[in-house]
Length: 152
Image (cartoon, rainbow, N blue to C red; front, top):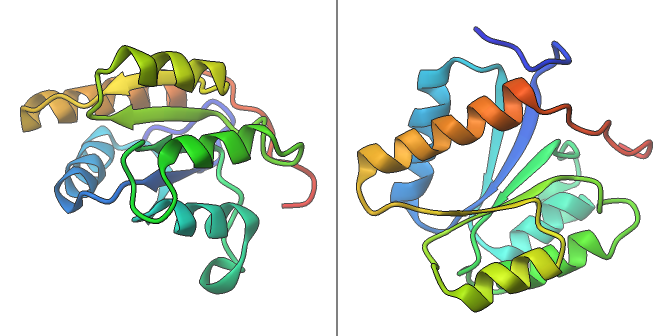
């Protein structure tokens, strides 16, 4: 098993409502053998509950990294991004947009709201797995992630 540069497992929050994309992401992470804890929530409201440790997510760990879809039920991904990046306790958590939208306005708005990267999901499942593995190689083996906030 490959470890993150810190040697510690990385907590990743995947915010994704499509079960097929969740399955493919889990498979890609498993195949890469990188030591991580993948937490999955299926809508924007649950993502905020996870990040703020509310309700059923009261004992959730603070994630080192968030993979965020934009097209979500309840609270859309852009709103989640805005809330995370405007909160002094959460803003240093890297948020990577992983979405099917190729719309230029979504790309621009994501970066204006301080996303750390914008990835478009490929349609082909093999290409999707390859994208997730490339993401993983970069974010979990090369990048030095910020420490978790003190209140975690």
